[in-house]
Length: 164
Figure 1 (cartoon, one colour):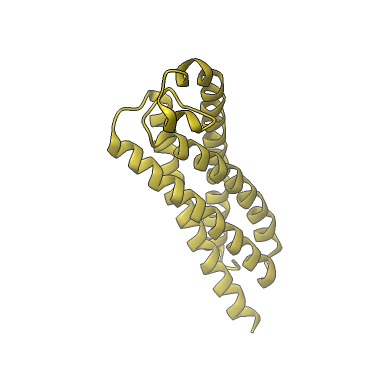
Figure 2 (cartoon, rainbow, N blue to C red):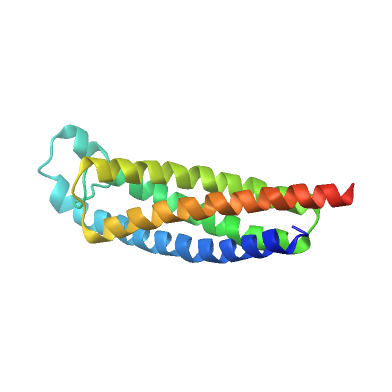
């Protein structure tokens, strides 16, 4: 990322992604906590397939459980990938940029999985406002993570071309 444009774009996208992933982690953690607290009273009247899952989410629809769990996982991995990506981007050598690119692709894949579940939850139907916020932030962070991954790969190619 020796070129100033791709380095500053990646730096800005890393900062934005840290904030967005933090919002995802907070909302998904709240939703899991709310689901755990309300599981005993809500799931006791359900039929067997719904009672087998240890956490029943009283809000949302049947796609809510996997969406919240994958959103929390994507948020934690995304924060870790963004923090290590910031550190590796400041080193400006090829091995560190490849490490940043690999962690960025991992975070992107989990975020796209959570985004797919968010789209499925939107398609199925009604959710409350907290879940709608989580869906919107997940869709936005998937786009910013995609741009961030692209900026890292542009920087890797630029630094590799200058060093050889």
